[in-house]
View (cartoon, helix red, strand yellow):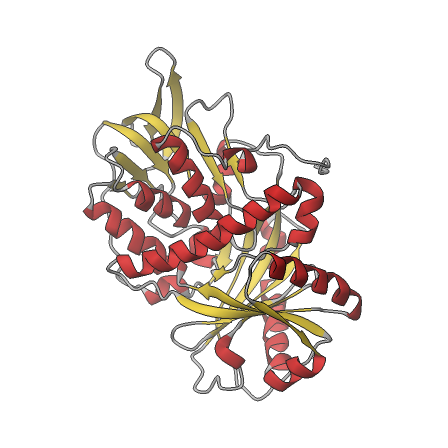
Length: 410
């Protein structure tokens, strides 16, 4: 899959990252993780102290896939409002999902304090504004739901928004305790820690085949170099490329665009350097970085054809820069990086763990959506419990065959 094109900011923040060898022999392990992006790193880190032999393979280099374009807004709220999720999954399941996402953010903060590499985790507030007057009522309904479930947030009117920002909207949810991080450093930080604890990590090691030994109940994965990995379990953490391994009808793809500015001397007009996004679909989102840049993204296109996506990059980067200047007219912005990438989602609004009859003893992490890092952490927690403890009470919520109240069109 041609995932992305353009220029990438995150790899430039770690110009000399840790490297790992290609696999040069056959291996036997308890758990094989296919994919060296953020989901694979979260899986390896979570399993590093399990006492199980864990191996990670990455077909290119660590963090070179969708991780390089992940804007890493760390939030519990997603594109589909919780008040809408209730109609599909019910009150109890939706409340549990919210709880797990909030726990995942806290877990990411704990991880930041436990690894050697600083991956720039910072707690940030979020401004989520109504893009038009018609969205105010549903935004207030979402605010009330989140407030009733213990989230720390306020509902702002136009006057309050205008008092804090150089732009104004009719209403907004101002929430406390979200976060941001550097996804490239995050991935390397977790794998560096996992490697120090004995996890085997192999770059330039692509899977090109597999078979299931039913008698031994083991998956045998073959690499492009002709080696075999004999594993009890396989976690496919290949991001969007996981769809190339096993199709999932709930997954859908569009194209998205992102620009990153040069460092900015004065960001004082950006209140609390909040994460910013909106109710419009498709929406724009904004954040700052540890070295005082601004990232703005969005303008999603329905195309999933790489050539069509790439042809619009120049025009879209100009539109994004114009949108940034409109919101912060007092700040001088200069373009540094611009890229376009496929962006995946799950049609019913929840991330998904794929467990399929044709892939016994395997888990597919489909943490697709606008807060994929948080989704990944949540799914990894469920998978690790299922492997290590033999059961996770939350597996039913995230499996591909989860119960729903209303059918979702595919």
